[in-house]
Image (cartoon, rainbow, N blue to C red; front, top):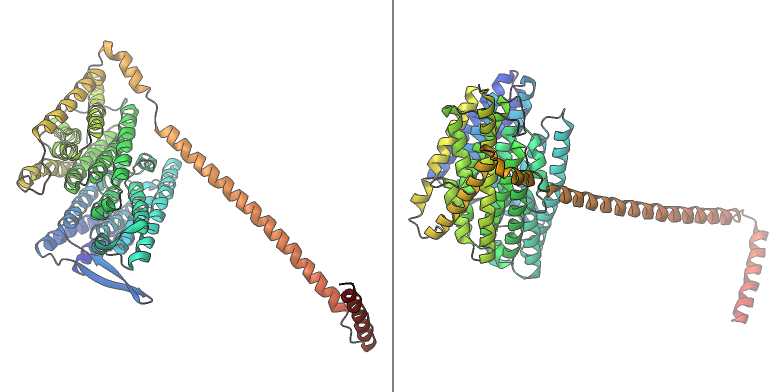
Length: 579
């Protein structure tokens, strides 16, 4: 099981980060583990052992095994996790300036990365589910890391409850597949699963995937999760954890399509995209805007998968990991320079080239500016869409998406131009991480020209690329006029946009209603159980009293027994005579 060795560096660093005495050593230990993991991924790529299995335990006559694979899809995901985990750890060494918290922070980050790597190499549903649960538990700790803030604790609680719903649904799907096939190998499931039982299992698994990847109607946990430290958002909620549901759908795509899940993936993805762009345009919280952008990106991936295009979804999957991680890192720099202010209307940006260049790279790739990777990823998804209505909706979405992400960039710059302030003085480790990831974003753009020579990769037509770019330019022009120049003629439109209804409010209200109904049902069941118990208790006491009454008749008197016998005999004769 050579593939499992890639998990060990982060497991060891997680333990050592907690045990080491000096808080200054916790970060370097985690960073060393990240560098070792990158080396191991490179070695596994060159010396690919293929699919391997390790028997975990046996259940009757059936062995439960951990199966790993290093297919092209698995190795790419593994490399992205290793790279982004290492960069986030490097970034965190400068960001995490509370000495007493460093032990726990770097330990939890390490355990999360280990769970994510185990998930990435899983080739059966048991291995995937073990990694799935590990990252869910670690994310609960990291979202609620600032335990002194009630909002962070509540966000962690909300995330774990919503994710647990998805976990139960996914486990139900796994159980149904086991009942039908007695095997949880992905390859065996794709080849043999069929019928109503398989369709039900596919539906449960899709629901679990949508929950983990923060898709409608399970998306509300992600924006609340922005209460965690910004590096946590850069790792969990952009480039790794939220990808778990998409990755699960990717590795099971032939089975899901055969089970008729394509329309569900498209529908959930499309609604998520619309909800995300509307909320992002009305939000003023710098990290929540990026969280909504993540929901949008995941929705686009699910739409591509619903149309059966694994390669288009994977292309966006690859590019989004880098540009969204960079965007969150840039947000962390901006908020740290502004004394942890999160409202973009109050943030002061910087026009220094050393600072603004990585920000522009991240925003341009996120928006999909040619020739950065975001353009190829999103244009590939558009090209994979074969329904004209869905395509038209996505084009309108691109306009709004371009508006809100350029607003995210331009509003702080506009504040800078008006205030004349320059607040930036970041730790070197943060700057290094931002620049390395920026180089990764630019370098990843070269992947498309390299891969496009293969007929396996989805074509991007000139028309799709031109249409997408036109929508982007329209969105940028509107954003520039509304939020940077703040032209007087557009004041009314700005006012309308700022008053857009936050779709999260009715959705959370619905969540509250569901919880209220469940609570009332629970109370009714509890009340019924109490009355049932009372009846049983009364009956029990009654029988005890009857038995005590009859017990008194057992006094050992022969005369008494004889009298009772005669009385009983006479009563029996009378009764039978009447009958």
